Image (cartoon, rainbow, N blue to C red):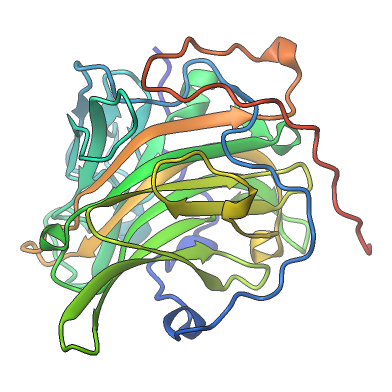
Length: 353
C-alpha cells in the first residue's frame, strides 16, 4: 500500500508558511470594502472534468477509520517530525508532516441539510495543536492532507487544469471555540516558480475566521468570514460570510497559466461562474504542479480550549484538460455528484514579458 511521505510538507518553503495564522487584512474587516477589480479571464469552475481514480472521498464507507500516531509532528515549531505519522484506513488521508495531525479525525453522521443521499462526513478537531507536551499559549494549527501523490503515484501538472471542491459544515455557535479569529483552512499544495526563478512549494487557500459582532439591538451576531490567500502581493482578501448551522461549498482551480482561482458560496449546490471570488498568481508565483489539497484546524494551544469542530463532505479532485488515456474515472455512488461536462482547455493570459 502506497503511503504519503511525512516530508511532503515538512521540507518545503518554510518562509512563505512561517506565519500561516494571519488575521484578515483591515480591508476584510471594514464593511463595504471590495476586492481589487478582477481582469476578464476564462474561468475553470471547480468540479469540471474527470475525477482521478482512487482520489476524493464521500465518507460513505462505514468502516472509515483514522489512525493518529502520537506524538504528532511539530516541524514548524521545533523541527521535530516524529515519524511515522497518522494515516486513514483507506489511505486517502494523512498527517501533515509540517504541523502535525488534528487530535480528532472521525466519520460522523451527515449534519442536517447535507448532500442528498449522504450518510457520513469527516469531522476534524484539535486540543493540542502545538509541540507535544509543551504549551505555547498561542494559536497553532494542525493539517490533514489528502494523499494525492500516494494514491495517484505522482504530482499533477497544472497543464491538466486540476481543480478541487468540497462541502463544509459551519457548526452552531455554541460549538465554536470561545474566541474570534482564524479557525479553519481549505488549502492546496502547489509547486511553482518564484519571480526570481526558484522552484519551490506554496499553499494558497480559503480560511475561515470566527466573528462575533454586536448588532444594533445589542445582541451578539456570530458569523464566519472567509478569507482568500492570496493575491500577487501575498495579501489576504475577503470572501463570502457564512452563518452558523449551515453548509457552504468551496472550490479552487488551477488553470494552465499557473494562477489560482477561488470559488465559494452558501449552500450545497454545485459551483458556477457566479461563485467566482477572485483569481491571482498567488505571491506572484507561477504554479507548475499540484501535489495535494488539505485542511487546517486552528485553535489556542493552552491545553484547555478545544478548537471548533469542522466537518467536510464530498471532497473531490478533478482534472479538466488531461489526456484522457491517462485518466480513469472512478465509479460513482449515490452521494457523489454527476460528472460535469468537459471544459474547453483554458488559454494562458497574454504576458508582458
